[in-house]
Length: 387
Image (cartoon, rainbow, N blue to C red; front, side, top):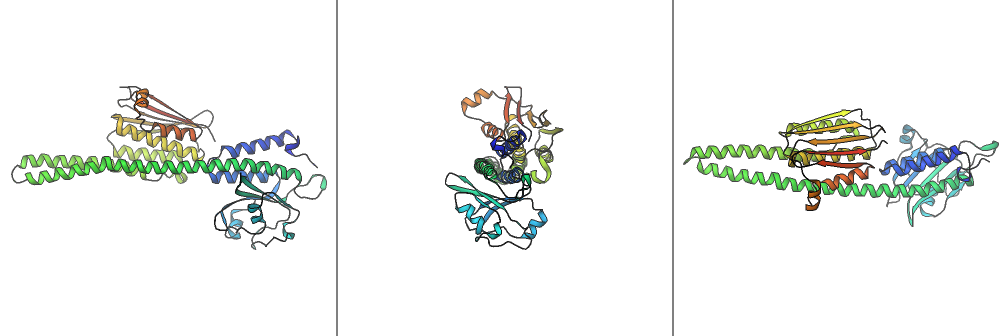
């Protein structure tokens, strides 16, 4: 029998375990974490098939990620399984299940016609304290040492237990990240609602009063009425600009379809048309980044652009995205405006979204720097590592 990577096995085995654990800890999206766990488990334990199920509250699975089965075969298998048989045992019992032939177990209830045939089986719950987050399932050991029977061993079970413990940590962290992102989105919606009320609503109110004043002056003082109507036109144009800017922020980013570079370029082009300031975008060799990092970079760019266009008073805003030596990316948003003293802003409690931007940068494993001084404009710089 070959030694387990946990029992002083080959250095390559230890390296493989270390790589798998690091890969789990680096993922921020729940779906990415689940996929990484399943792929790592199948490769490390030399199984033909692997799956990880996350239960819902209705006797089924909210998510069920598989590896070793093609997309077409998975489509033909049909709906996600219910919590029954061996799958239920993994979710409702504390310990592992290791079977030489799952088909001979009395709890086995069969599987759909398109489902691959499976024999030897190893399952392990993924638990966080008393809560069962899911369960890992492996089937069909591919190779056996010394010509012995191809079944999962004690060492395999020990290794899967270690993976399950780290999977629980990674999955819990990913869930916390997604919840914090949901809160951030809610906060952004609230901020946009205030923006609409404070900017657009007030301008529309002023426009209404000015139009009423013009109407009363048309007959007795046409010259003054003309001046009031010119003011109506100016207020309407300002309200339209404010509304375009707000709608641009509300518009969902097409990161999944177009990627960060194309999405950011489109966003800058829209802002350039909507504002009097000249807004430009340049990009130098940036490749695709992990989804969480691309979203963080886009949101920081949007916040920095919002501040520059609303508060700086500058006639030029430059957005630049460049690739770093390590394969990551650095974002720079620089304006030609009045600038400010960052220390004075912190003391006054007027952070202009800087706290939110720093939180986004650190949440994506990056950093944020603010360079500004009165009369010299402002540059926001965010750097994220490679994936």
